[in-house]
Length: 357
Image (tube, rainbow, N blue to C red; front, side):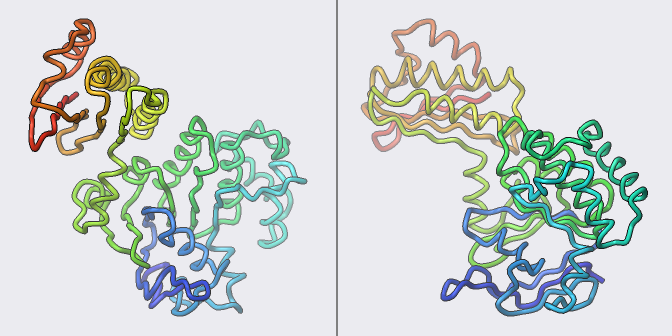
């Protein structure tokens, strides 16, 4: 029997239908990542499942029991939720944040609750922060406390609503590391996330949300490496790529380089590889193509099946290999020494330089 099931699940806000007739089953021990563009109902799905914002129509079942307003309080004790904004009690220290629920709702003794809380704080690496207040913690630490607090209630299911979206990029890893560890314990989890590498690594199943429901679902390998439906394919391609359009010689090269850095960070590239990608794009665009042609389009992509990266620069004009004819000898030599395959093509008035790494 499934631990969580929806039947003809619909959620709307006045005339705006967000989710329509969603029927799905979650098995005990599954880790399901929910991905997709903004505004497609990912967080709405979690909130409606937990009756924080009840469905407009349809049913939700937990361990075979239909959830309604009468039994939701009891079910919520078994179905925890971790929010984007942490949701800690600001007037309580970390220990008290973890103990309040078990003592008041589960009937635990203070000693029992504190022993369990300290064990959980060790699990998330924060035992030394037990008597700190939320304002004394970093964003990543607050979210780890929020996860520990959720675990203190001994849930059968945890719903994570974009647990890293409010964090500085440097803090994302400490939170995903905790969730990654939980994924190996057999705990059932639903995770709304924009961290695609993380989703691919921890999930047993992935939902891609679009068109008012679960547009496509499958294994991480199936969704991220071989998506079957057009919108999933387009989404996966976008997250594997960085694009920048140069429209004049006075373009914002800082924004372009920052975009490349973000692409490298999101793909967890080794520093050596990231530097090579940045060098190729910087030398080719800034020092070779733009000075001569004025405009170009840059694309940096990860070719997963080939396990390599690709840089493509397109520019107008007559057929000309900008790299081969470059006046900047140093830039040309650095690119040739860094890139693997380099190919120039000319089709329909557009030059294309493709370099692989």
